[in-house]
Image (cartoon, rainbow, N blue to C red; front, side):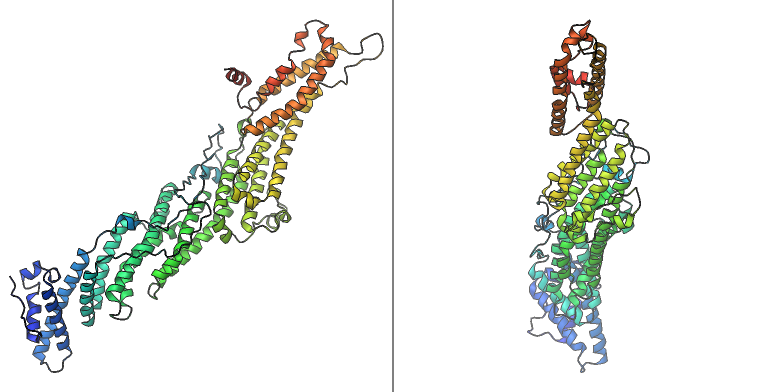
Length: 622
């Protein structure tokens, strides 16, 4: 056992040297095995007093050269010992953060409905994409926006008192660390002290990073990952970044101040940066890699989440990294925020161009809602959920008329119709304009004009319903433009009826059936028979074909059936009433009057179900 130190009230230089040498770990196995600060507090005090005496002697002019050499040797031994003690105290009191400290109580991730509704091309059609299908349809398959938030849409990211410092090391250990640091710094061992502190605490930060799921990935590594992999990493990063800034880094800053504040100029800040600069750069490199990655529509909402998270953290970053030496961290965060904002603007522009240029030419069966329509409307519904952020980022109107003047492949937009609206709202209306323009082109691939009009009616009606279903989107689009869209799909419904039923109803006219002169009844039975045969053939063809067409919206389907019945049934009933007797008085009347009024009423119910009428009738009868 080591002999206890002298009990004298004061420690003379010779005694101080003995105490220092007794704890020289290079000369004594017992000194190597024991730590001063883990033992008796009196021994701790004696050792610190010995160091103080050695330090005083170093500046004394009364000691001889021989004594000076002994003092220099003693101080080197003492500093080496204190460095070990400093490291040991730090390590022994370094523990992972408690689980509840790894969550940010003020955190919120933007909510939003999923874009995946109707995102799979096979949801309600059997359309085969062409080999040259555009990026927007491919994006539709890639886009998986599964918000894991519980906050309401348009929730604010601003928070108050969001920094939550915790005590990383007990106060008695901090007292010892400060006592050691004070003596190492005053002896000229500042660099060694900072290096030891930074090494231990950085390891602690790294351990907490691993618990938070923050990986050591370079910007290149991140950019090589598939977007589906990055989506989950972004969600994890958002949660982790808030904990890192508001709790982990803030607490490390507090610990540095507790140990080093007042011991020299900005020493606490130097230790803080030694500890967290590397981890902070690692943390922000992820967001930077996302901000400069290739832009595509499916990335918009996760990039907006990143932007909102970083925007929310900027005030906290300015507080935690408030010194001159940490200015680079503040600058990096601000630059990433700016690049994320630019990425959002670029993605929106590219999305608009993708909607316009989407080239698929295979008509969707039955004239139902095109996958592009579902994708675009779900997309802009989500855009409206981010209205608060996007309204601050989108400050210019879309380039339309002046930019594309004279180009027949580009629609134009009357800005007088949207006067007074914010730029974001104008962009949303412009997207709907170019979507309709694209759909109009696709409608021309149908050989049947009636089906072309039905296709446009279905798709514009879907656009109207999506706008009505989102209060935020409806507010931005406005009732004036919504009314215009409603008029558009009603016009298409009218055009469909004209294209289909005018020629059918033409068979039920009186013209051409009457003959004059002689003693005839005034009605040409042969012409009448041909008229009934023509009606039967036309109606059967329309019934056979249009039962397989599809109107997905049940209310719209029923409204169109009623409209058809209101024109068809009275006309047929009247025609039958006027001319039935002429047919029934002849031979084989059943060959000409094949349908009763009730038969037609039932047959109209088969229309727009998307299945052959025989199958539908059998299913209905069951």
